[in-house]
Image 1: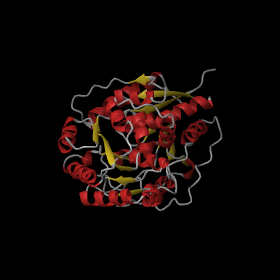
Image 2: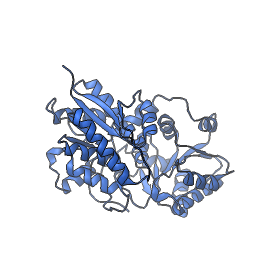
Image 3: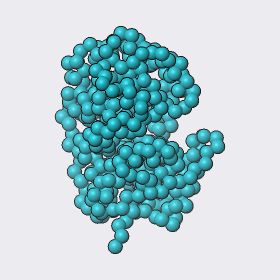
Image 4: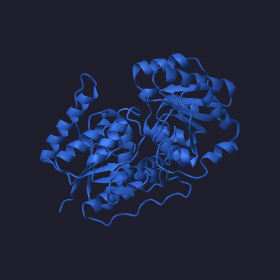
Length: 395
């Protein structure tokens, strides 16, 4: 007798990274057949990310984009998912996070009366304008999900505050912790040759910088890059690796600001194993990435968050991250404090990672099986003693 299929829908690299451990855990459990479905939003990057785990998409939608708008993408994905699920109906659909793919997968499954499992549920900034459109997407998915897998107790409390039944919410931890620990632990050689050359035999302290979000583009990015240049000028024992956004205008902006600056390596988006290894070797991270905020504490690396507001407030409560926005003076001051004091730097992450213990994928696989009556519900992730359970957003 064949196993019932669960379709794991992802369209971006972060989704692929966070879904990959779930697919592997489901295979290991042997209760359900995971089917990795690439939505067509960023097909090449999804394929590359899955390859880091020895996986590949089982199904890839072919989405043609003309305008590049959200409405065009959403409607194209929903139409194709509906056509697929009319003839190949899964027992459940797992969507991750807050992308357009997540919303399309959740709506298409809901309309087909297929149970929706929302991985990384409950994140809230409290502001529909920031991040946009992610905050709206994650709230909409919550309205149709049958099972809400929250990465942290705070995320779970956000859902309970929205009147989601407690029986439909489980704290699993974040699967990105599972992913990055597994990949970084393999210590693969750097695939990117510029990074390999920069890190070969280097004794310099590594500062990893990522500024990808749309709200960082333009003037905020100029301010961030000015802070990077100031830090390089102040400290002759640091080097910076900055994977740039693929948008040509953004890459031109980065290149113009950092051209000729010594000890700075600007790259195209990096393969996930390269990024994980860099993160594991970093002294400090400057980032606007939600995923990196979640991954860095596992390696004892503090993060200065290049945003004014973050929905990942657990790292702020735990002390392993600080909000600095795009103010060059504040970025330089906070980074300098950590570069000047190893003890201060290490103290930021002494409490461990509030986002997970490396078992989130196992809990997710079992919770999905339980939803379908195939296994008992798993125990929730133990709550770290230092984790704050107050709801809201820190600005």
